[in-house]
Length: 255
Image 1 (tube, rainbow, N blue to C red):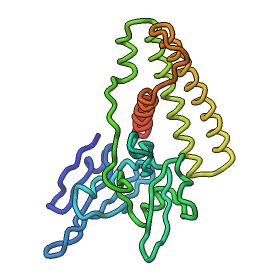
Image 2 (image 1 turned 180 degrees about the horizontal axis):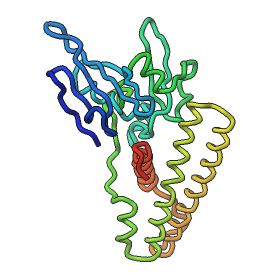
Image 3 (image 1 turned 90 degrees about the vertical axis):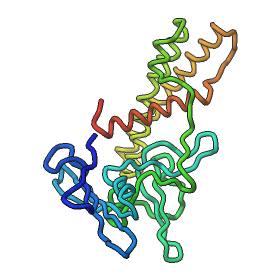
């Protein structure tokens, strides 16, 4: 990942070196004493070879988050799971008494604000600016799981049954990631072809989830004598956590 580098003077910083493949954009201070600080953020689009304004912030550090930033859904689900961890797909906004209210939403939650306008994130940023990863209220709560990565757990499994259970959980990660990706894509581009793809990915995820549930039930029955065991929330959240990592890797161009 590129690092931030100071430019020719104190009021400008570049993300990576200009003219290289890693270059992402820059932030620049646009106010001076005695005025409060104000930093504008500009993002470089390598495909279009253009630099666009994407937001402003009262500090350099905050402005830097807007350049190549990660936008997560801002819906608060509950105390156990915190905010929705999946990537934002759209921005819903509404004018309320002269103030622009807005929320970043993933595909699943893209319809929760009834009557609000819908924008693709890039369109909203170009018009109003947008800083990433801002929670609806308070700070974003990410539930901590005291569980190892699924692949690591599979390698450490003590029996074949346990290993097969972890393998089934691992095989559910990619179908959930593809389903979430197409859910967000359909929210941005609500066309029939995208709905068909979304439905196909949903079916693949449901089948993978059912298989993981079945292997967990077999493992609990054969090795612990427990009948009809259901996949616990911690394991479902573990799949979800690794799905988010998979989506992040996909966004960054990884395999």
